Length: 360
Picture (tube, rainbow, N blue to C red):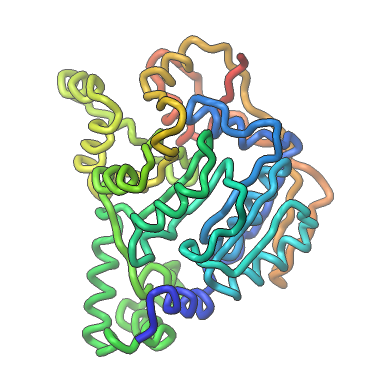
């Protein structure tokens, strides 16, 4: 039986993930995305010195997305899948990206360089590894003292049906000890009638996956020498960790609790409607953590300016190839609702597609 790292490489060489992005974009303002991250965690992350970013487990496109979003930084993208790296490299050449290095490399492989990183992204990766905690320790060891590690792992309440399906499918096919990914995917589609629908092999027949509640994720991060900072706001999945309760007394009780306890309760009460376990973290010996109450106080009292820039876009045609668009587009789109800062959180505004940055 192959080890899990070999199985992961084989799986993603068979089914490179994710599917190709239809559009890649880079902002005219090189610090446009960086400002949001610093606002989300409440402190400076990206300094004037050369910024180093590692996208650990970058798949087919995430390293390119980050290189385009952070044109001032040097970006390293690594993945166990050679085909995924090849796909990313082809698109990067079309986009004429000069600040991206790509390697076929495991998160647990040899240290990539002596220099630590300002920002590390590891999204949807460590839950496919033998020891997610050991993977977090490796990432923590490559992070600057002032750096930020962005991590996403599966929410236990989201993936329970898929985990059960995978186990049942392999028992039915008797492939538990001799995985055949293409055969399993074909049988999965037949069993569920999925042909032509949106579920992907990564969802229904991956060789291994773990999942977590917020509480378990926090404990794992602390064991790896990390502390959880704030949720990573996700406009594509408009769900907030600010659980809204209609009962005034219960809402007051919830809102009086510290961040970690509120997020644990939100994860449990919202169950499969709770957000992804997707958070910014930092080294436990790093700068002091700023809690949500302080961030909200800054939000309410700050003079704000709507974030705006223009994007250069690379659009994928029917032939599967990227082409640079001849015209730029404004970003973001202006919202259509009125803002009341006294009772609307920044996380809520993020889910509505209306981000701000502070004017200091």
